[in-house]
Length: 79
Image 1 (cartoon, rainbow, N blue to C red):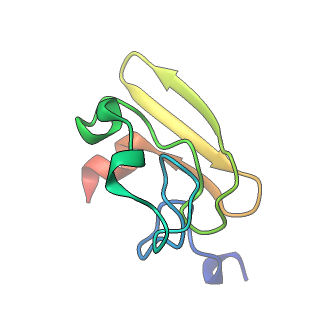
Image 2: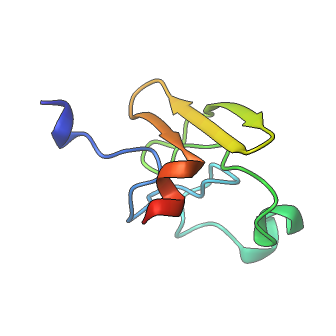
């Protein structure tokens, strides 16, 4: 059952992971410069647009959506 629920950063995204705005309505200028440089972790769930709980660590970060689960930066590096 939980395998059917996409993760918060699973593509395709319906919402911007740095802004929470629907991708069709999001302007590229709305994405912060630090996020474009890869220095910022995602703050919003790409599936539902909810604000995620984010913990930044010296070696990366993890983010958790209340509906779509948790993702860790180390998981993204393995892909």
